[in-house]
Image (cartoon, rainbow, N blue to C red; front, side, top):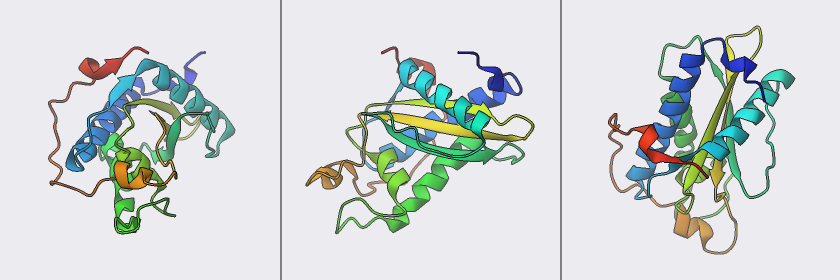
Length: 179
């Protein structure tokens, strides 16, 4: 598969991937969840879907069996750290989640997948939209979260235990799973 959408600003795309990965682990740490590993296989799947979305020009979930997925469209003109900002926006959904009634909640799908304790690995794909300064960001998760079986949300979406302190020393390369 040709990664034509990565050519323009590819360093920026790699920064988005790295920052998205690191931000996931920072928020998970706050909730007592183990860190995720970066999977090359899942990243390849996510990259392929991000490229399809960039070609189509609209957001749609891939429905890959056995994988969780979060998707967004990011404006590359923003000067903020895009990967961190993406995950921060997903994390804000925590305000819609009710720990007293754990379960699938409208407006909290992204954050529950992000924090899903039994998820062990992710893959991140980023593709620039042709002719625009925007990019689709796709994150795949394995095992998938948001399992609505009895007790699963209670076991996997834990309340915060401590404040997030960004760990800029996390090295994505040491957390690569070549599955």
